[in-house]
Amino acid sequence: MTAAALTNSIEAYLETLPAEKGYSVHTCRAYRRDLEEFAAYLASWEGDAAPAGREEAALRPQGITPLMIRGYLGVLHRKNQKSSIARKLSTLRSFFKFLQKNGVVETNPMAGLRTPKREKTLPVVLSADEIFALLDSIEPNALLAARNRAMFETLYSCGIRVSELTGLNVFDLDPAAGSVRVMGKGSRERIVPVGKKALEAVRNYREQLRAATGIGEGGNGPLFLNAQRRRLTARSVARILKKLAAACGIEAPLSPHALRHTFATHLLDAGADLRSVQELLGHRNLSTTQRYTHVSMDRLMETYDKAHPRK
Image (cartoon, rainbow, N blue to C red; front, side):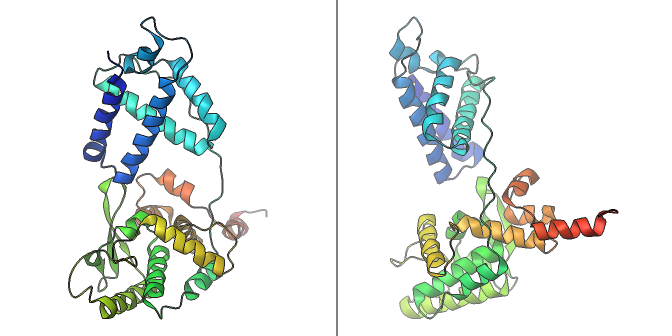
């Protein structure tokens, strides 16, 4: 087996991700980085090698041993958080499962390797007063400001992911029904409600955009545009939000995903059931929703006071 065998196996695996698993370009790119990092480690492997020679054994799938995996895990622990290590190991598990299924390897070197437990950290969640202050601080009297107000009103109103927000097209929004069609992870489509405040902000933005540029005269296309009139990126949205939060005096490290946490937490605090929130967030498993949201201590205490017979 040549030294390029592992590279060929990686490429064959990556080709299956969009079609068979419905993974996005961003997700496939992350899988590629993880596997290329692993291949680079194997190329410099300095442990015991197979009789055929260190370099060839390290760079062909059949020569990869549990010892090599453990060595790689040790390297990861030196420079990565547990959440990153867990993701990288998940990539390797999926890769070797693919190789075993296709007869490339007889045994899975990942078998028996335990994934490190992730740190339990509370997500950043804004209070109602904080989110209102943030949104109201954006005066929509200029085109980009109107866009920013519309974007963040929509994020908080719908609880969608930032990638879902930037992927929205004009025709995805149905103002009459008060809903928006979202393409989520794994190309799973869902319909989520949109509040009046968000709809008003989007309408104001699109009217200003049409007046300034002529864009939007009955045509489809990206709902939110950057200054170059192209689709916004998730990174740009995060940068804009960080700047707005700092100007508003919010000290917590705020990201677009924090607005998703805030959306879910506020719904739960108001009495929404977990299953409903799961559907709105687009989670396949309820356990994911439980990790993404938390119930406030005030609500827990209220439930305790009402229910416990000897409080």
